[in-house]
View: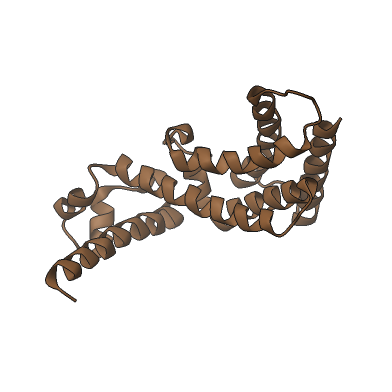
Length: 199
């Protein structure tokens, strides 16, 4: 491996260390506790080195949000691929979305601004729109109205998202119901909205 390749690899590793350290700090102390100084201390670098990779804390937050949406989209694609019927695909996709939120609580909070003072607007990221589009594609299959508009598909998507994100937020911020009850509510919500789309 040449010196150029080694330097590039080291830069990539340092950048990844910064992002991983930021996420670890947040998991332990919350988003409001995150600072460039804390990240530098954690990876044992000076703060100016962190600034070589990210202009400011917001730059780190945007990159973590982007990575979160890439990961979420990959999981949703896998869930969709396991089913042939649009109804089953949507149910699997929304369950995957739910599971992602609780498996990656700190990241989900950043991606959607749950219970925090900072929020990266998801629509400013192509990765966020790509994740939404995965749902749009399946919802389109269920709509029986002839010559439907993109606005209708968007409305149906946001009906889903409002309910499911709301349930997730309730459980992240406060203690919601027990897991069995949450799963029942989630299933009822998904199936109810699918039925509403098909009417």
